[in-house]
Image (cartoon, rainbow, N blue to C red; front, side, top):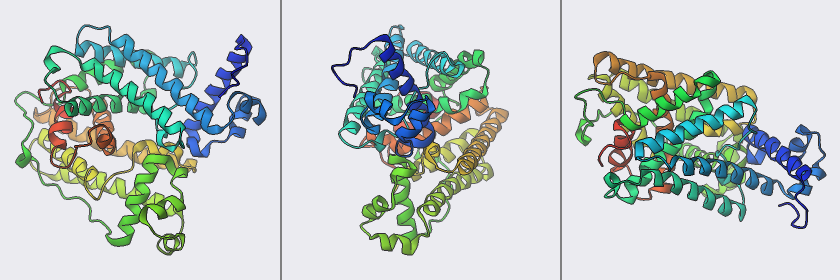
Length: 409
């Protein structure tokens, strides 16, 4: 951290803000493990020693960037908390959040650190940042405080807060497709979908027996599957560069020699992890498209199948946010294009439901983005709801995702 004896002159603060903005930009692009102090310094016309005057280590700089982003989001929740009811508070939060993103994209607000690589920090920085992020989560959960939610359990509140937070984080990855002055409208539509869900008139959330048993792609089995799961978990936690051969091998309790016996390179293994995740999503969507019944039921069954996979022994899927730390720009763009195409397929199922009346009229493209964010983030649900499993995830998580976060538990 900056020297405590330094007088925080306007010039000092201006330089430090420039360093934080440059660091946020580099960390977002390269990941915490991939970005270097030299690159950060060069991007603002400084030498590395000038950066270390403000932040002695890269981990200290990353911590400062995370805490700065968390503080900015906490300010949004505090402002939103002034609204009278839950729906109004959530609408205010997303409206303010869209305003922050518009200011960043317009260049009137400095870049803000993404929350992709929180777990890539070493100790003690990781504990410091996670405590701050948990406080942010609690602030967002407090927006649900109302007489009508007083009887909800902690698990129910946490699951719905995770739905809201995941949706907000993912908005940042796609809202740039819209004009800046359209950001408030996008925020209003995201909020409306979160509050009211997707079900059309007369459509109800199916009981366990009502979900179509959609087939998932066959697992490769054996050692290959074990390496894929271990690598996926580590990339989700620590990004591409944080998921080293040593760490993957240690998680499986095998030697590096064993790793290279089964895998040509780490890059090949991580690429296979992406393909595995895409195969699950692609296969599930294809099965949902081909199944019988109204679009609403096919959407419910497809989402349920992916959630079941996420929390099963075969899970998780790679988080979409892992894309940002891929070292190869071409692969990064290819992965993003694939994610975009899969979201278009979700949109198609939503449109099918709108056409047959089982899904209400809404912005299908935005609904697909919201649903993708929530399904993709389900791999982290056990952090906030330790009791979440394949048996209760439909009631705790999928039901408010599809019927609205204020639907009765």
